[in-house]
Image: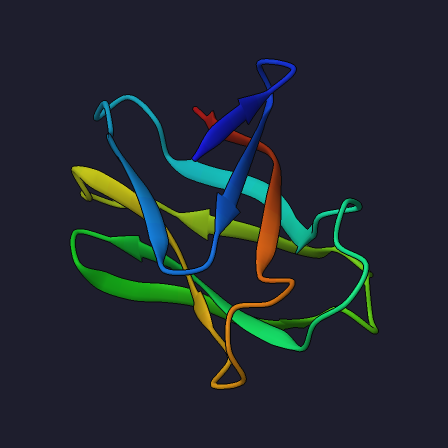
Length: 105
């Protein structure tokens, strides 16, 4: 996991990052896309979990680089976890940029 320009996260296949949530926030927003550095590959799966429950899931493909946005109510969750896994076709090209993930009050 890498932080890019102090605003984006870069995750490779079979990796994750988890953060604690402060109770003052109500919504998690951002978007995900295959990173621009990827030149070939297949697909990968991106999941957002709140307290171990999947609340958002997308399959990303190298041939379709359009970002997928999310706006997720946090409710009473205490943790958020971003996960990237292979799409069942190996891990070539499975590098995902999570763009400006942020918590809103």
